[in-house]
Length: 223
Image (cartoon, rainbow, N blue to C red):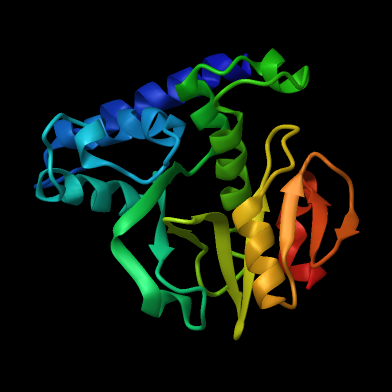
C-alpha cells in the first residue's frame, strides 16, 4: 500500500512540473528529477550535467535545478573548499550534490524493495539512500545548511556548522567501517565534536563518536 502511494505521488509531482514551471522548460525539469537516482549511484555523487544528457552543460539545466530546489523537491548540498567558519564563504558553487526531499520517495524512485531494508541486506544504493535520510534529518537543526567536503584525497559526507564550531559527519549504511578521510581529518584537527552515523550503537571511538542512525534528528541536542 505504501509503495503504491509513493508511486502515485511521484507521478503527480512529475505531471505537475509542466503546470507550475513558468518560463523554465518542463522537459528539462523532468530530466533532472529523473536523473537523481543515477547521479547518486555514481562512485562520485557530485551532480554531473552530462549524466542528464550527453554533452549537456550547466547553462542547459541550471534553471531546472534552481526550480526544483526552490520548489523544495530537491535538496542541494555544496562542496566547500575549506572546513572553516563560516562554511558558506567556501562554497564551490559549481560542485554540489542533489538529494530528494523525502527518502521514502527516493527509495521508490530507485526501485529498492522494502524487504531489502527490513532484512538488512547489502545493495549498491544503500549508501546514497542512507545519506539522503541523514541529510533529511539534519536539515532545520542548524542555522547553516549542511555541506560536504571533497578533494583529491577523499571525502567527508557532511559538514555542519553550529555557531562557530565545524562538525564533520560520516555516514555508513552497511557494515563497512572504513572512513579514512573522516578519521584522518579527526586525527589531524581534533574537532570538539565528530560523528559517525551507522547501524552500530552509541560508543566513543577515539576522537569521534559512533551514533545509531535513529539519533540523527537529535544531533544538535547531543552537542
